[in-house]
Length: 148
Image (cartoon, rainbow, N blue to C red):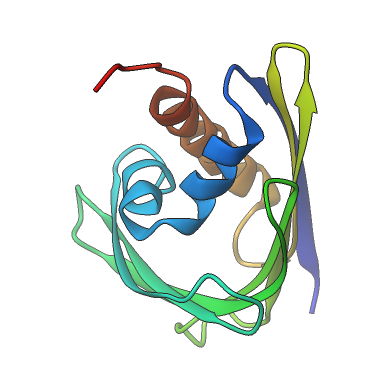
């Protein structure tokens, strides 16, 4: 079985702590992770090594949904998140692994993302486009400094 890999790199005007939290808080993930045109329902999120996560992305236009989940494999506060993902749909077999690395830079945080093991039925370029949507939404969540 052939699988795909995508690599992404961004710099955002936000502290690593803020971006790290956005990857691990259920309400934040539901806000930014689904690509444009999708909604997200977080069923479970236990943000600790060995903890499980489970969510659904629903295509708002068609109503079709994909459930997926996995395990947190590595968490280094404000620096690194590594987790597995697997679709419930047998037509999307295999286990993916995503690694997010955060590094503080002069103007904010450098973010590197590597997602491996993307099922062959999902073109890697479509996954890459989805991540670009997600990262634009992440930017809109973490960059604004709004006083209480």
